[in-house]
Amino acid sequence: MPDAKSCSECHQLNCYHEDKIYPKFCLTEALDQGRLEEIAEIYRGDGIDGKMARAAAEVEGTYYGKLTRVEETLAFARRIGAKRIGIATCVGLIEETRVVVRFLQLGGIETFTVLCKVGALDKTEIGVPEAGKVKPGAHESCCNPIQQAELLNARHTDLNVIVGLCVGHDALFTRHSDAPVTTLIAKDRVMGHNPVAAIYTAQTYSKRLFDAERVAAL
Image (tube, rainbow, N blue to C red; front, top):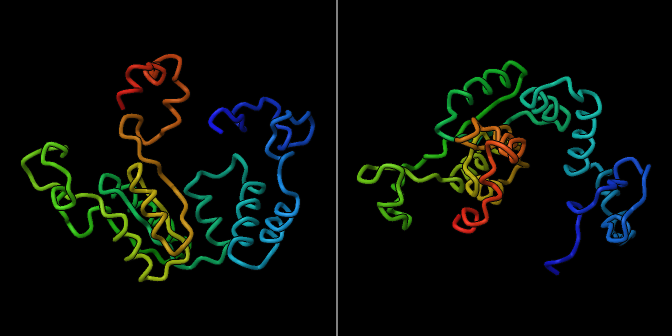
């Protein structure tokens, strides 16, 4: 149903505090209550999903507006009992990763980092044409998120953290990771790794977001 309304079309957001009125198309109102209770039981349970749900809620409630995401990552890890954290990092953010590693180790966490270029496979070896490289004519290793995940899986990490993996590579990494995955830094080369800046400036500097011809060509 491509024309079906969803949460982005709702201006009540009554599911947050239940102080307004649900619209007719509300997803909450249409939920199977039996399934909702089953999910609630998962959150109440002793499994990893329940631990993560309660830990995330506790970190939010305790430190709302007080901690940076770097600090929240440690607070969350401690609450789920994570002792070993894997870091899947972009090569362009390795210096930032070194700072994160120092911080986590200071917090008593064992860390293991895998760079996105591990394996050093040239992009042409996976079917990317030479013209598709950033710098054609030279060796240019492709990102290798599946290998990153497998190396961290072999270390039996309790939690994996993404530091700046490209759009799509992050999806592949998450798909192949055995451990739960959280993102610390989202890649955005243009916006200094702050993707929301494009949204905040959508009516000014980033008006190209609504250039129909340009969007169609992406």
